[in-house]
Image (cartoon, rainbow, N blue to C red; front, side, top):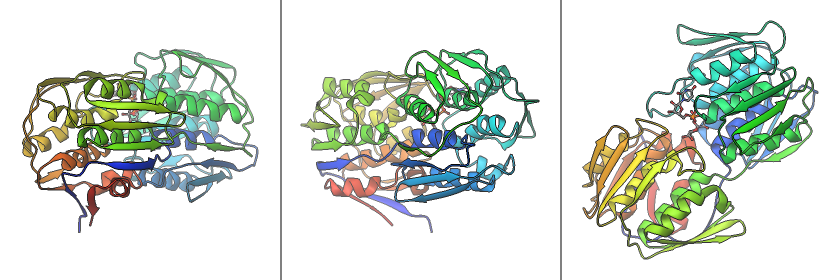
Amino acid sequence: MNEIITVRGGKALRGRISINGSKNSALACISAACLVNDHSTIELKNVPNISDINIMCDIIRDLGKTVEFENGCLKISGEFTNCEVSTTLAGKIRGSMYFLGILLATMGEVHCGFPGGDQIGDRPIDIHLFGLKKLGAECNIINGVVEGKVTDRLEGNKIYLKYPSVGATCNLMIAASRAYGKTVIDNCAKEPEIVDLSNLLIEMGVKVIGAGTDRITITGQEVIHGDICHEIISDRIEAGVLAVATTITGGEVLIDNTLPYHNYPLISLLNEHGGYVEEMDNGILVRSEGIISPVEVEMMPFPGVATDLQAAVTVMATRSTGISTIVDHVFQDRFQYVDELRNMGAEIERRGNTLKVYGGKPLTGTMVFGNDIRAVSALICAGLVADGTTLIEGVTHLRRGYPDLDTKFRQLGADVTIG
Ligand code: UD1
C-alpha cells in the first residue's frame, strides 16, 4: 500500500535542527571516490541515507567494487570488473550520469542506460557527451543506452560548456582527473557541490584549480589515492526548505550545520519579504511573524536562487497579499506541483517557465500528489499553512532526497506523519 504524508496545518515551527549531508554533493563525491586505483579504501562521512544514494551504491557493487554504508559513513574499495550499468538502475537516478565519466576514465569503456531522476522537464545529456568527446571518447546513444569507448586513455583538452550544467561539470571533472594532461573547463557550474567535489579530488591527489569560478583547470593523474576521509558538505536545499517553512509559519528556528553562504540568495529573499535571518558561524537563525510580501524571483544557476527551492518559494508567494512572479531559468517544466497547489485553493497562472501567483487566497487541506523530491517537500510546506488536513502522495520521492524531513518537521512542532 502506498504511504501517505499527513499534515495538519496551523503550527508555527520552533526549535533547533541540524541539517544532513548534501544529496547532490554525495552523489558526485561517491563517483569521484570510484577513481581510486591504489588498492586503498576511501571513506566519505556525512552521507545522507536516502534511496538515491543506496541505488548509487548498488550500481557500484554491480560494477565490481565493494561498498559499505552505515551511519552516514560510506567506504569504497576494490576495482571495477565490468563497465555495464543496468538500464533499470540507471533509469532510477540522475546520478547515474556520472558513470559515463567514471567508467570511461577507469575502464576505457561504458554501456549505461539513460539517467533517470525527477520528471522536471527535458533532461538531455548532450553537454556531458560533448565534453567527454572533447576528452577523446567516442560516445553514442543507441536504443536508449549510452555507449562510450576510448582507444587509449582520456586526454585533457579545453572544453567550453554552452550552459553551466552541474552534472556535466562534475562528470567532466571526474573524467579529467584520470585523463592524460591538463583539462580546462570554461563556463562551468559554480555550485557549492562543485567546490566540495574539487576539495575531495584535491585530497585524492588530483590538481584542481578554480572550483567555484567560471573556469576549472584539472591536471589528471594516473594513480589516484584513497586512504582519506572526506566529509560531505551539508544540504543547502534541506536548509532552504526549513527556512522557508519557518518563515511562512511565523516561527523561529535555529538551523544548524549549514553554511549561510550556501543560501545567500534565499536568505536575502527571505529578509526582504517577511523573514528575519541571522547568520551564525555554522547555521542560520530564522524568525518571522508570518507576514509575507509579494516576491519577484528568478531561479538561476548558483549564486542565484536554486531551482530546487522554486516550489517552496511558490508556496511562500501564495501567503503574500499581492501578486508574485517566479521564473525558473534552469528547468523549463518543473511545475507539476502547481496544479496541486491550485487544488488547495491557490491562484497561480503559468506561462512557459513563469508563474504569476495571486496571493491572499487561503490554502485548504486536500489530497495532493508530488511527483518529484522538491515538489513533495513544498507540498508539506503548503500543508503547514493550510486550513485542515493535507494528504500527500509521493513518499518515495521524499525518501529519494531527504532521509528524515518528516521527523525534522515533527521535532520543530509541526503535525506531519507518514503512514
Ligand atoms: C543537478 C541536481 C539538481 C539541480 C540541478 C540544477 C544532481 C543529482 N541534481 O541536476 O538537483 O536541480 O543540478 O542545479 O546533482 N542540460 C542540457 N544538457 C545537458 C545537461 C543539462 O541541456 O547535457 C540542461 C537541463 O535540461 C537543465 C539545465 O541544463 O535545463 C540544468 O541542468 P544541470 O545543471 O545539468 O542539472 P543536473 O546536473 O541534471
